[in-house]
Image (cartoon, rainbow, N blue to C red; front, side, top):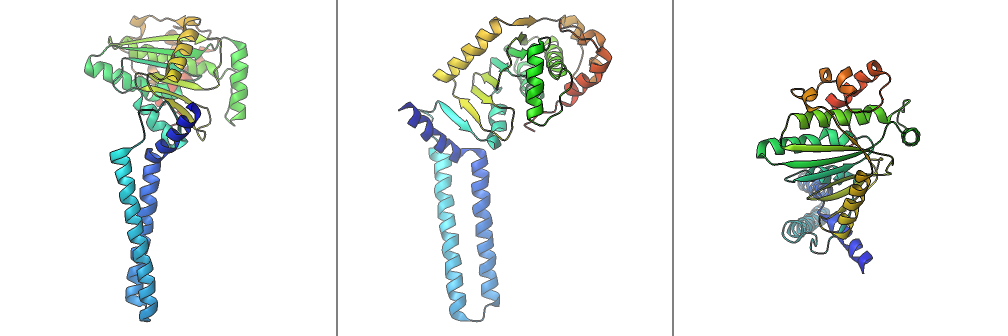
Length: 306
């Protein structure tokens, strides 16, 4: 019963996704345009009356059928939609992941992130949460859980993952990303009294990333060509992953920083110096070598979902 419910929901939600809507409308619009063009060509160039009449009739039927299909699709999408009453788990296509993830930080009071680098978190959720907290004077609590870059086991595993994905992996690929996420969080929270960000460093390297808020939760993979899992707020799966992230957070090392050190700083290169890079109790041997890389990650914020 549970499996059939999830399968059915996945089918209907697939029909109403933004990617499906764009592809559906674009495909039939192109088909209708081609048919209308062919009707015009037949009417102006064909001399055989019978042949012209047959071709025009067929094309008109195709246009009429396409318009009927589009009409029913519009009625379904905008007046019926997917069955949200029984929805608990949705398989989200790669093309729809970005839209799901951008909706999670909207109008929330609590946001949780558990990942490896935090590249997308730095790029959008963090900035959106900062904006909403500042504009709406709303207190927002953010929990960030990252792998500990001082743990050699995690560094080796993450290096192997990047190599498998065909990406460049340095000596410690975790370090610049974790520092960049810590730096961005420290700068944002130290300059916004309505935003409370807590960072913990875990001794576990997750095989996925979790973004969880009052709007739901989504599990994504490293490969942007692979699908994601989306869980509705309040579902048993949502509660399960919230408990998982909370439990891992509670047994992980908390990162603290001096807010006065980051007061007045912005997400720009000059904010990354020896003092700020060393403010998180994370081992940094080569400050000069890391400074440029961390500054680039803080300022440009590259990610897979652009």
